[in-house]
Amino acid sequence: MKRFPIHFLAAIMLCGSLSAQVRMDSIPFLMRGHLILHATINDTIECDIIYDTGAADMFGVDSVWLSSSQWKPKNFGYANAGGGAGRTLIRIVMDQTKVQVGNVEEHYDIAPIFQLRDVVDCHIDGIMGIKNIDKHPFEINFEHNYLKQYKTGVPNTNGYMKLPIKFENNRIHIQAETRIGGKTIKGWYLMDTGSSGTVDFTAQTTKQYQLDAVPGKRYFTDILQMGLGDKKQEVFVDMLSNWMIIGNDTIKGRPISYIPEGTGAFGNASYIGVIGNTIWSNYNIIIDAKNQTLYLRRFKPQNPLRPTYGYTFRNRTDIGRGWIVSSLERESDAAKAGMALGDTIITVNGRNVKDYTWEEEYYIDEQPNQILEIIGTDGQKKRITLKAKLRW
Image 1 (cartoon, helix red, strand yellow):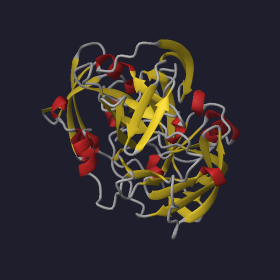
Image 2: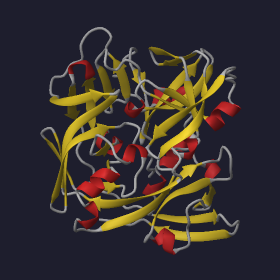
Image 3: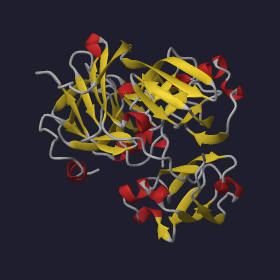
């Protein structure tokens, strides 16, 4: 339902969603396109954060969450920060900060303050990567929704593919190849659990492989705040791949995206593109960065493509009345009916969006029809009726 390439719940809900196979020495997560961890800051401040392999050893918080939380840092500074939408000047907390997630405790000298909820939504308070991932094997288990750092012992890799990786500048690069309309794009891709997408090719790759000229159906979508950075609006193009190969596993007929004018992480980069959680969530993953190796085991078959509505939203009921339309396919029924970027969705099928649970909100696209009450950016009310459609 939501597309959040970022780049860089109550604890009861988290624990209740996990299999009994999750060990006490593991870190449970809730899968909502992103991996959501429950964290504690300085022993007392509770928050929900994204785990992002692209965030390396960084911990940062959202500006709106910080202003309304019980955490009151004393020392601040400024720094330039980069992400999926370029670079921007941000404030940073300069107090020593302790962050506890599961059985892992990390300490940070600085904590960036992002406008993170502009990229994700009000369910997310912060973002982090596990520090020292190059020191110990690290497991991301999507089958049972947990992370584990192996400071002692060794992970069981029976039944896993063993693949080479490049671990550079605290980033994980993996070799893969994608076939689109007769063109094969093979090389190093960035492994990014901060992206809920499939594959997003950079502007550099788009130009190098002339993806705009590849034959096949394509959809143009405008999106607000593609990632962290100063570029407020972007366009991405969706096409259907023939296949994608990682190791000895072939993934057939998945939508991919390319960013013709991308900046930051989606501009000129050392990698071809970003592989996100729509792909990774089919696997259990063990990262041995010290030995430049990744182990991968598929645990579920490829799901069929589902009908969509041609738009996505971000829940900003923390600061406003509803869900903000954050991306819109140009030729979709939603756009033709008068929906626009930045519109606020107030009700869906007669129910106020503030009354939807997070789980209901996340799966809202599975409803075959939607009747939306909307307030436009001009303050005028709209009523739009939509039917979910298969794009491919």
